[in-house]
Each structure stands twice: as structure tokens, then as C-alpha cells.
Image 1: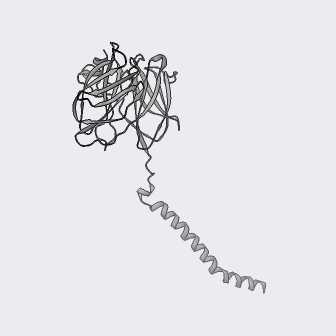
Image 2: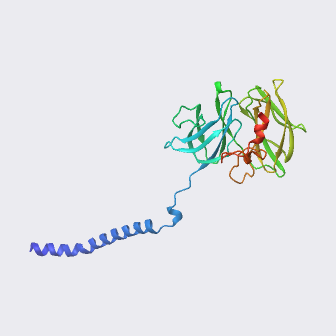
Length: 284
């Protein structure tokens, strides 16, 4: 009798067990199907936010350096520049957001050698920055300038000043028509951007010291955004080196110094820099 009761109970519960098993199988199949047949777009990782970094060597008595940007998350070198000389400004490098270490060592020195100077920088989403080393070798400093690549109005250009000349505590720059680019800009600072008409301009530089007076000619392309780096020259005075921050703000930042031709015919220029004959002539 007991056997009959057991057999009857088993038969009564069988449909319930079958339903449970089928439900589990359907759930597993659904999960596998979702994993195997989802679209490539769903499988692709979300794009990482990025910003842009460029580096400038603005110390007049510091010899050539090698520059390395290292990610603090993982310790990988993400950007390396070799044999960077005074007055050179690299193009922008697009990097994932995060914190990085910037280290400068003597050109050709081992990567493990003690840096001449190092600093920590933060790359923010969609933000371009310029990292510069400036000042005399005995008192090197680093600073980060935030670059504004807002599109200029039609037939205009935007321009600012970075005052890195050690021979004058402050510098003022005006166009030949009297438009001020910067007034009494202190050493180690960046001015705001001024809007001027596109085309060729003659700039007048004046500083606190008597020798800190000069003129410079620049050609500002329509729609361009520019930085004028004020530096020492070999005669104890000052000079301007213009750099294009962006030739078109709807594209990735350009970077790089505006310079004349001819130097590459007899010299091998690092791939990350342009032709620096104009700067060599200006400071020497």
C-alpha cells in the first residue's frame, strides 16, 4: 500500500517538476542567446573620455631634454619626446582622462635617471592644456595653462600671450593698430585671448627693463587660435614665438610652432616638431 501511495504521489508531482525544469531551461537559453546574439554595438566598450596635452621647453639656460608622460594608473609611458630644445612646443597628444606624471631628463640620459624636473598633471574630458617648464635652470618651474579653443568669428583670429621671458618681470604686447594682446603680463603667466582681424600683424613688445623691447611680425589665419610665447633672445632682449593652438576648432587641436622653411633640408627634425629655423634665428 505504501508503495502505491508513493507511486501515486510521484505521478501527481511529475507535471510540476516538468514545468520547473522547462522554466529553468528557458531562462538559461534566454541568457545565452542575449550574450551570444547581442549587436556589436552592445558588445563594444563605451568610448573613453579624452583630453589633449602639449609640452613646451621655455627655460633659456636648460639644455636639450627628453620628456616622458607616464600614466599614474598602471605606470605606462604614454607620450615621449626626445631632444627637446629651448623654445620648442610639441603638437597636442590626445590622452584618456586621468592623472599623469611629466618628467624631463637630460637629452639622451637613461630613462631611470633623476629628472631635471617633474610634475603631476590632470587631463580632463574634452579639455586641451599646455604644460611648460620655464625659468632659469637654477629655479625651474612648471605650470599648466588651460587652452580655450572656442571658434573665432568669421575673418578673425584669437590670440593670447604666455610670458616666459626671464629678462623682464612683465611684458605688454599690442598690435600696430593699438589693440592690446596683453598689458603688464607677469612672468610665468598666460593672458586671456584677444580677438583680432585675420591677416598679417606687426606686434610691439615692451617690458619693464630697457632691453625688453622688440617688434615681431605674425600671420594669423582666419579661424585660428594662437599663443604668442615671449622668450629671451641671445642678446639679452625678448622675442615672440607664435604657436597655432588650433587651425580649426572643429577638429582635433593642431599645436606646433609657426616657423619658416629651409631647416629640414640639412637637419633631421624630430617627428613631433615642425621646422624651427625662425626660432633659431630669433634667439641667435
